[in-house]
Length: 152
Image (cartoon, rainbow, N blue to C red; front, side, top):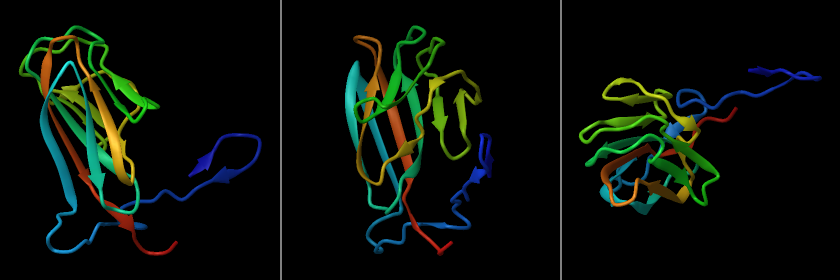
């Protein structure tokens, strides 16, 4: 892939088929990791990625209460990567931020987001969920743990 600029530069993207492989840990550990929990107002979720590299992160947010526009935010670590939702959400919605398909949806339809946040760091990573004060939602995080595959 070439990049625009004063000199010709580029990179070879790592893809699951070419350069990365699903984590092949021992039989007791699944390569897919998920966290399913309830958040009220604000929480920090710790995800354990036993793979060797950063992995795509699929997140579903299921509000238990109606939430006003811009009141829900997801971020990683200290907030360097964050996303917010500029439109309101209703109780029972399924708001999905999907790294696997590069989509943001609400109940299966395209849904606006501001910012970028769709991966989990290698090793352990902190993920912040901030909701409207005194409101709650169920969150589901899913990652496919990845390791280095074939050599380039």
